[in-house]
Image 1 (spheres, rainbow, N blue to C red):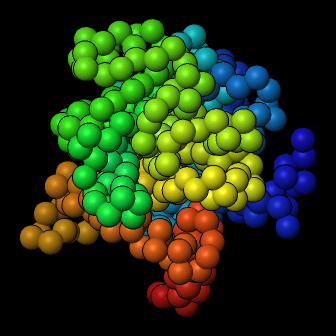
Image 2: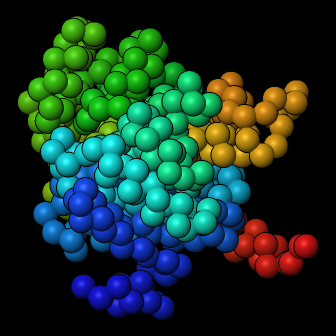
Length: 370
């Protein structure tokens, strides 16, 4: 696969794609910067055993584009980027590999800030940060934001409440049956919010460890064998919280839920799925709108170090970040209303607003300041 053929004019429009290799540690990584129109690109590092290099490249291009739209819709002065490390983290991850990766991030000179994603965790970012100034999502002990899954789940919960209000007239999820596919970092916190809200939770995960955790922690959760069983269950809301492509030509016709609001990135498997969802009368809360809580959390680590918050507090401030993530409720409401007013699917309405902000603010950034 040619890089320019993939990223040239008329295709994805990425600014920069960097292939990184360190043979002694086994590091093979790709860093993709989609846009820096709003500021330096921010996005996590996914450590995953892709079947092929082409799969890794496709994922990082899709994810980095999604981060640009996510950061724009979250109102952040940050562009969009993403990185993938190709390999099995259980077999390949080491301090030396993470530090080598950190040096590649540093070599970009601040065009890209990295953070956690699938396969990477807060302790990993502490190691990466030993080689670069541009790692976020570090531990609280290191002055960082900690686990970004905390506010990712909080934001999804707020987006789900907004979708419930739009569909049923009330943001309350009490008594609603919520299906969660994926009990990983985010799914666990989301389960807690929903149980506290009084919702009935049905869940599944491919990891027996995650299933065992749910059985111990929330015995009231109804655990099912797989995602196929989950989507055919009698649920009100479907929350994809694992990998992308959760909504496709097979899933959508079988889905019994009337709302989709989850944490997974790139939930629409291909262009056109959003129309199929709308035709079935399912309300889709765009993934990059509702799952922006995590990037809001790690962005506060970046921007908080540079300027004081209200009240003069410098550095990362959890309450400030949580207050901003709570506004995902209002943002989701606005997207859903705009979609109705314009007669388009919510994902299209969200794309239009994100593109408008990137264009408008990007134009201002072209005005040179000394």
